[in-house]
Image (cartoon, rainbow, N blue to C red):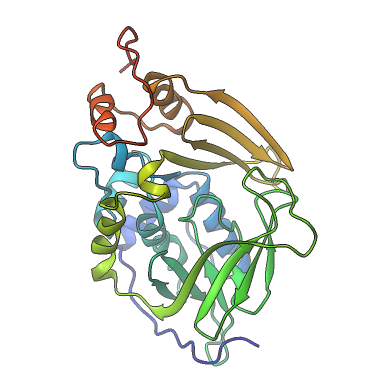
Length: 308
């Protein structure tokens, strides 16, 4: 059964109609469209193939800060077309597309440490089905997943499958059936990716939560440069690809294949890959900033000149 306690109130979008139209154009969609599971899936996948999961500003800038405010993430990703964000920014921006229709979906942001959307599609709202939607984990689901115990959806490409595991009415885990290299786990084995609580999150605290992550001394996001972009299929019915930059490697993943494209010997090579494959560009000062940040830095070759 679905959790009976979830009731999502109708809320206004973070964005004006003009901003929403610009966002939709940026991800390759246009008005009008009606709210449906098919439309929700289309918005999610267009969002994922346009904006990368991206923590590079935390490593390559002097401020070591990602602006995850609704206006800040809109300006950087939609207007300036600069890189991506992590969960607080990616799923805040996704609100623009999910809430766009004559009869808007009902949306709730939940967390606390990882931010996702809960979405209820109209009509009717009398006994709505709730879906978990997440574009802010990098290797998370590419389909809405029904908030029901052990509900499953296909991943970005076979053999990947995501499922929701219920710990209680309010505590849920997102799990996947493959290992970190995309290889299937033994049948019936699931790897937990994250845990969320369905209590509504307050957007006013997102910046503080994001800054808490940025200021940690240890942890995956502060110790590693990570960028993930989904790639569009050659045919409409084909699976999505996934391009992953993690630490000193760039890899391509899809349909059970894991191909290392390049291993980086120095920062110049990694910055070059960010520019070429993800459209993320930094100037030469970025090397100084990441060298000062500690464990995420690669060797810098002073004889090489990063092409600005």
